[in-house]
Amino acid sequence: MKKTFLLLITSIWCFANVAAQEPADTSKWTTGGVFTANFTNTGFGTYWQGGGIPSIAITGLLNVYADMNAEKYKWQNSLDLAYGALKQGERDFIKADDRIDFNTKLGYKLSEKLLMSAMLNFRTQFDVGFEFPEGQFEPDGTPVRNYISQTFAPAYINLGLGFDYQPNKDFSLYFAPVSGKGTIVTDTSLTTRYLPEEFIGKKARFELGSFLKLKYRRVLTENVTLETKADFFSNYIDNFGNVDVNWETLINFKVNKYISASFFTHLIYDDDIRFEVENPATGMPFATKRPRTQFKHVLSIGLTYAFGAKK
Image (cartoon, rainbow, N blue to C red; front, side, top):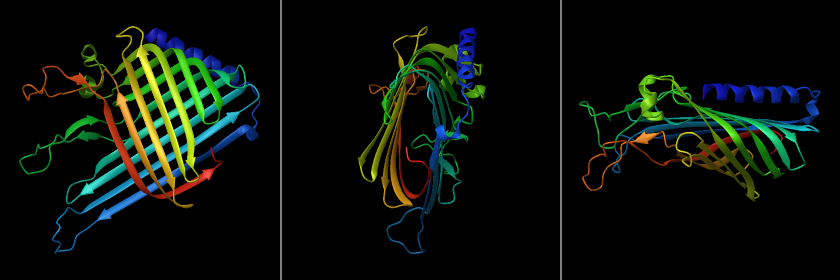
């Protein structure tokens, strides 16, 4: 499996090296990005009959892109960075959002709408992550927290060679019949959370399968934009037919030049990420952990600064 993965990397490198022979021309590049920052503070005076806990929430999102459109080639790059922290009362800050997502796709134009493309996607997070089981507290009254993630634990790498259908600037459908997926867990104490049991003590797993990516953008009204992208991967060798899903949707609401609101959703299904699931018949967890659909949403209102060309 590792040899196949290395062969795929070598093939993509050769493809990129051939494309790099085209003379550089900065006029073919389109670059830009958006930075959003949000801050929320809730405080209470000595006398406040409604009760509550003072809190501070800070979130930031940076999206940058650099696209090159030449006569024969198209090279598209994007980087999404997000981080948020929340503090309630005297407790320490805990993260509320954490994401690193890098994409690069280099395509050779077979026609105006169809490209043969090599793709790389890398995903991980910045910081240590914890889960807080509901209703569980330490002897001092603080909530129980379980360590579940950190930088490169996990991290995901997808490499593919395939075809990219782009009928317009707002839609793309990419399919790689030969694709490699790497799951990296640098802390072996977390291996069982993200890899099958036979990988206990190991730091990485490499899979060979097929990969499908959909990307769509639409201006709903003058000040409202919808962007969604979904990745689907199926392993050819282990449990072919089980599909890993990573689906993100972002709706942007522009109030004026500097103020905006956004609503972000993220859905994940990975057969290798398993959770304790309660048996409704007994009220106790099942003997073995099971995969489950993961979902989160982030609603933000704050300051936005856009630069570069509009996509």
